[in-house]
Image (cartoon, rainbow, N blue to C red; front, side):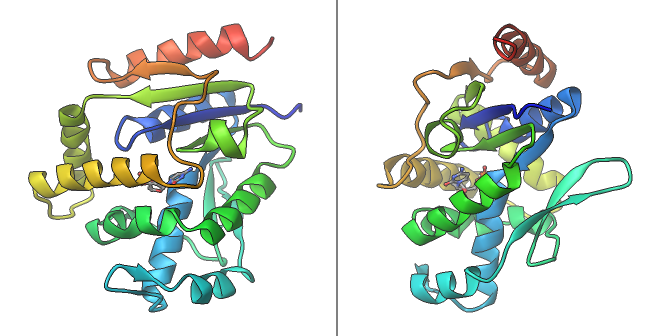
Length: 228
Ligand code: DC
């Protein structure tokens, strides 16, 4: 099978995971959630005591990371997910504690280099839908199709609240909105691989669209561009 990569980049809570996982299922591609990789590394850093009062000990963290790998796990239905250091990670990766520190971890050069290599290795000789912030610009600039999602802040806050509620995590709307604003700012203004729309990406504003509408718009675009 030829290697096909579809990138889905965009701001937090614009619907990237929903769209990327649906596209992967529809085309029978692997699905790679690079944001989850940054969340897992943040959790790992916290758990090992490499983050104290919001300050990350970058050298200690990278020393530990260099012996570890992400891998695919394929279940009996053929669905794929990720393991790190042989372990799987659940909904707690989406807790406030992790959301609050993930952008600080994601701006570190050594962490980005480590995950860049991991992402390249995971995608080797596979057809994959990859979601993130720098996928179409830095990690896979040659992706066959690039999609960029945007949405109004109030809609994104509502979606994020709903997701948090569904995961039974207590929340406060103001804290959710502040976290989205803070992450957008850190992710867009960081020196290395900042979040920005790839020049050749197709943008979908998901504010007033259902999940199905967004999927159909993306599918139509992919079908006119993937084969070419
Ligand atoms: O998609 P998400 O909200 O789960 O991503 C969590 C954080 O990870 C996000 O705030 C920034 C970082 N991230 C990144 O820097 N680069 C990526 N390719 C994906 C995520």
